[in-house]
Image (cartoon, rainbow, N blue to C red; front, side, top):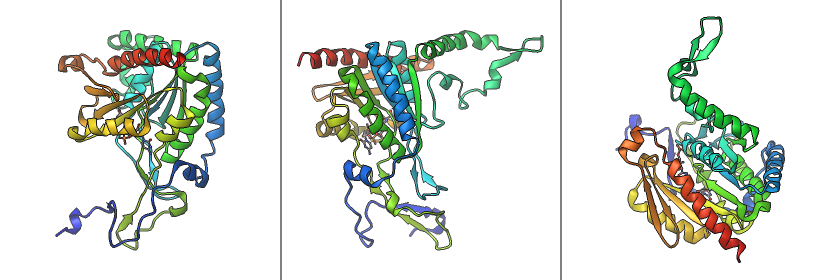
Length: 335
Ligand code: PMT
């Protein structure tokens, strides 16, 4: 028997047999037809179009990096929402290595998640004040023990800014994410095979459609709350088939059960027919990833010593991806 103390305030069931039959998952066309776009969509789309045009003219490769987790609001005037664990480390770290390798980066990330360069000094590490000291003349300097590393990061950051290699756009909800993804990938289509799509964001699989969402704060007077969530349409499908058809598309597959990872990664490739899935397990994602294609699997793994010495797995992921992108470009051009 479940006691009151252990009953969660919000309960999730896939299907409650005694409850109403859930609506079938809607397709992406219906989703976009029935969901209002965020009001910042057009200005963000225009900025990304300009960024893409600049780099297309220079013949530079551009990568869209999605990063961080999407939220699922429970109310239109949102007081409560469902969130996920993602801090945006994968995306922010990868963006730096892409820029270092000569790519221009559209960094589409969850508001307030980690960002390239500033991630080294985020609140989850030292407080930024710990890096500073008084200089004895009324000014401030960087503490000597941090200055070498900080100079290295600063120079990379300044180059990215000077050469306009990074544009940052934000989402919060899964709705924002879906609209931005469609807008940005469509804007990038002129880059053809020079575009890479690196989908590292942790995207909600379930949501409450606008039409079923309470307008105001859900009241607690009626007791326990049972939520029924609809399935989010699989957005990678139109992305591969239409919006980004010539680009090199990399999605991530996150699992917690290692026995499922490879089979689920393969299933994703078979279903969507994109170029690569990078499989990772929640607890080991900073140490090991597996590249899965229809033909092979390649594991990239850091040793414990490398991890202790601050080596980042993205340092291995990005060069390997670029090698595969090179091949993709040659192959696509010769078709
Ligand atoms: O941010 P960190 O803390 O560093 O963590 C990094 C990470 C673990 C979040 C990252 O490495 C990662 O695995 N990201 C993908 C997480 C995820 O959404 O996995 P999934 O198995 O639920 O989805 C797999 C793919 O389906 C994704 O590429 C996604 O684009 C796609 N998808 C998901 C939902 C949806 N509605 N439509 C989709 O097409």
